[in-house]
Amino acid sequence: MAVRKGKTLAVSIQEHMAIDVCPGPIRPIRQISAYFPRLSPTSSFSEPLSPNQVAAPTSLSPSSAEKGGGAVGRGSSSLLLPGAAGGGGSLSAMSSMDTSIEIDSCDSDDNTALGTLEFELLYERATSSLHCTVIKAKGLKPMDFNGLSDPYVKLHLLPGACKANKLKTKTVRNTLNPVWNETLTYCGITEEDMYRKTLRVSVCDEDKLTHNEFIGESRVALRRVKLDQTKRFNICLEHPPPLPSPTAMSTALRGISCYLREWETEQMRSLEERGRLLLCLQYFPPSSDGDVKGEAKERARGGLCVGVKRCAHLAAMDVNGFSDPYVKTYLKPDVQKKSKHKTAVIKKTLNPEFNEEFFYEITFSELATKTLEVTVWDYDLGKSNDFIGGVSLGCHSQGDPLQHWIDCLKNKGTKVERWHTLTNELPGSTLQE
Image (spheres, one colour):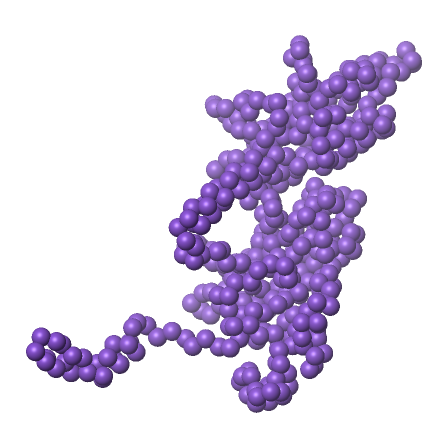
């Protein structure tokens, strides 16, 4: 109790302890596993791990397990990496682990609080397609009041446009061990994409009245998947990588960090992928046969045939989550403005199939100075059409567009098909329709 001595108010030791030990709600005591981040085969060793990330230990040696409760014993217990032999769990085992070989990092459901996911990846080089077969999940974290969940799986290719390349499975109701056996396919995936892109696999809980809830995720570098070979994964779901906290920075560093983040966002936006386009180019050399008629007679004089086959994973431009896409082609420079061709409009889709061809009558020497500009638009009735993305092919292009153009010029009379990445910035073009 408080005792007044003159003008000084003293506090007894009992009152002092009562104030200190009751600052707010009781928080759970952190376990020793919280200080040792769990390493799974799907995690990259080069990525920094957050000290605040709480993860369960992979496994303990038998001697410590017998001493009870997952606690660390005196002297004889040691943490083992997944797949390592007993007693030798050291950093040397970590350095010798081959991350290209998938290991089952979840021997039991107790190893993770979020659950495990089993799926397969297959890349078909002939069709430039990536197939992801989502098989099943086990021991998912309960998200509903009944102790169950309504889980579904989302796929997202990184880096890439957010709405353009998300795929989703069906929802399985009221279960923590769902079985999907569903195959989701990405079209227009090149071999270069397999070396530089990462597949994010997320498991979420569907709620009809509120927002869907996130359960866990895993990220797989596609370079781990061999071409034309099915690779099976059985992984532990993890929390998303934490964002750096701005409170840990000084005022100056915070300002620099915000500036760099805005600059990086602007740079990524200018090069944002807006979908894929499958083009077919074929140059017809002049023919001496004078008996042909109609369209064949036109092509007998020589020229370039541009085939617009299809698009895949276009950016959604309408409020309904779709677009009404069509494709325009130009052969520039176009002084007389007669090179414009346009496909039909395909309604409410992000994966339209056009299968239309356009012919440009031009000599081979003139073709070397031309640039083929292909743009994809979203049709809007009563207002300006929205620009989705485009690509330009010519001798001044770079990367895949340049290689496609060179292959067309080298192989006269042969159809050359190639997928191209659409970007929202096309040099020399006007973004008004």
